[in-house]
Image 1 (tube, rainbow, N blue to C red):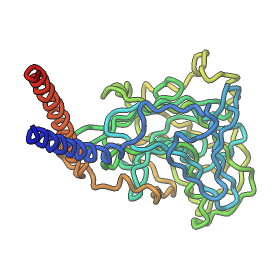
Image 2: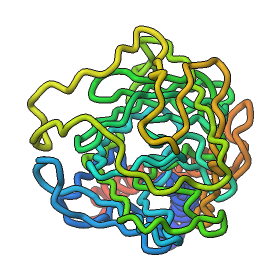
Image 3: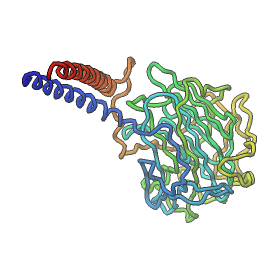
Image 4: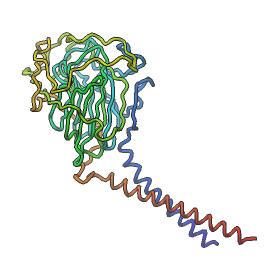
Length: 392
């Protein structure tokens, strides 16, 4: 009897070790992609604690305030003071595993937004400390621009309209060496741009999503001098990330990349008055009940108006072209605080890093340990039943 119990204890200890090794193997690799899916935040909590990353420079600020523009509830407010040292005010999610996702969000540029010839990044999909963002949504002059940096192509998504909420839906199938990537951007329900092909640096996990404002050319090391104008403010609300079936966001039209002529001026433009814009869209609650405003048709390439904006300091927009647009002196700087996605790029046959192997080995050990535990418990139960019948 003593020998039987000793064997049982040894078997239990061995199974516990197998399960522990399996769980330990799965744990660290699984946490590398830690964004909870689906992800949703409308800032109704009054804070930004669900966002694990925050980037502030100078007097850049992120607050939760009453939503402007007649919208109900709260919204995130991002502020950059033009004092010569503030160029970043952003919050971000964590990484995700490879797949297809729908990124939805609303943003609001107030009526006093000052047109700026260089890019203001309002959404970035960032890949790690050793890479720049492979995908950027920016405001340049008076246009929305989608910049796929890995291919060097920029897509003109239409004019910026101030004093109104913009509802964005961006469907992304992240590319791998064996999976073609795709991007479909919709504004207020209408497709305004699409991209086919490589769309990320193909690291261990896909890029994380950043929202807010980033003006790289406002850094003092780039020679920026304060204009003395009031701070720049941008609002965000109702951000979500949801998985979608592969191909669910395939483009219905073909959008040609745009080409925007860079300014010949070496320095930044002098202060300008706010560019004219469409009037506010009225008071629309968070759950809009009215149909979205009409957008330019995407039956063909998105065209850029031939006339330049009112300010002479803003570069004129050229017609769409098949050649990549000039980067407009926007250096895609790295995020030095992000080091959890700096593994080698994915190999042609899958991941080049250890995560898949660790996950597979740990998962197999865990499954084997659980199965053996179940069988051992059944056998012990049978032994106990037989002993109860034999003993008086």
